[in-house]
Image (cartoon, rainbow, N blue to C red):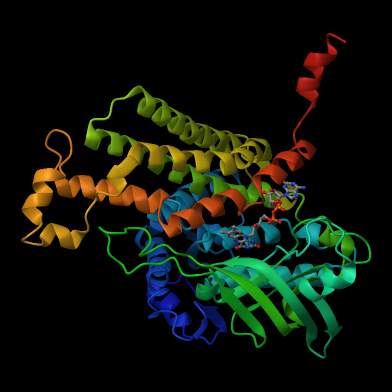
Length: 475
Ligand SMILES: Cc1cc2nc3c(=O)[nH]c(=O)nc-3n(C[C@H](O)[C@H](O)[C@H](O)COP(=O)(O)OP(=O)(O)OC[C@H]3O[C@@H](n4cnc5c(N)ncnc54)[C@H](O)[C@@H]3O)c2cc1C
């Protein structure tokens, strides 16, 4: 099947699913007031690939259909550069506010399939075959996929007795006639209410003796026993003037409960295989997926820089304090752009001619972003000051009693109208201040591992020889 349209995506949301939000079970995703905005935005992302088919689509090597480039295993540096343009187009749609548009997991599974030899070892050949078949299915059907790979923890001291963890994290209960029965939970699955399928795959290596927890699989969202507990909705009624982002881009995050879920054998990619479980995420996954995550982040930083400048311009704010903050935001955006460009210029071919960007520049960027984004939010709030709260709604602008008073008292510098000023500051508050903006800041801090843990882990992958040589010459 060729690339899916937004209409086909929305039709797919009628498949049954066990979604709980704001204290009740939700049956109608497309028309639910808290979900409708994001559902239609994801539909627009599907339509975008058709509208910009020259940038977003390529030929499926199996069926010769036109499919999104995120589904296609990159076989050259040129393919990565083309994929960059597609990922950028998708990121620009929500200025990076939707982190888990379907391209994120399409890239992940194309990468798993491209690096199939790493999965097809130590007796896991059948799992690797299942994975490759699933990736083909995913790209042909153009499903929206969600994932949950982080096990919930209730005691971070590390002294959690194993029997307690068993009740909490997803684990295999038994083999069944057609597959395996699993039970437990995972946190969190972004995009879950809007997904056609959910995947689980390894996160960090696990010790001998915990093989029941070493699973990788994917199942339809409507699989019996699968339950999603969504966080509070942060979505607002769509109004592109009043809250341009909160009405459209609340992609949701849900805690996932596997209340005895049967996974068919052909959907199991790892079943207790410690060697494979502990190695598949350590090779190509990161550089492959970081192309999507860092392009999205770069688009968001670029937007933040332009928005900050617009806020200053509206008020004719040329203060030194504001200039310094804008300068710093530009540096972040430019560092991000340079790191991505560098990683693509130095792209690497792996086994079976599977190409990824080079890892080092993207690892460095990934480490810094959880610290940069909160600073960017802080700077925009400082520039925005009280102007973010003296920004009337669209309805006020039309009110005959209020309009002329708003025009009189709430204009900007020079010839900036009250309406233009209000629009800029409402946009900025929805970017950094509203409930959804708060969620997005939390997302940037944690979606690819926590900032502090990333900084510790990067020491294991950072190249050392050249810098060690500088010290050694004096010792
Ligand atoms: C909005 C949002 C969306 C998400 N979406 C998804 C999704 O779609 N799919 C998915 O699988 N996961 C998702 N996640 C989960 C995300 O992957 C995890 O939150 C992330 O990996 C951090 O996990 P953690 O809480 O175990 O972090 P930790 O690394 O434990 O860090 C949390 C805090 O613990 C403290 N800490 C304790 N011990 C250490 C230590 N040794 N090193 C460093 N810090 C330590 C620090 O204060 C740190 O800030 C999402 C998370 C958020 C917030």
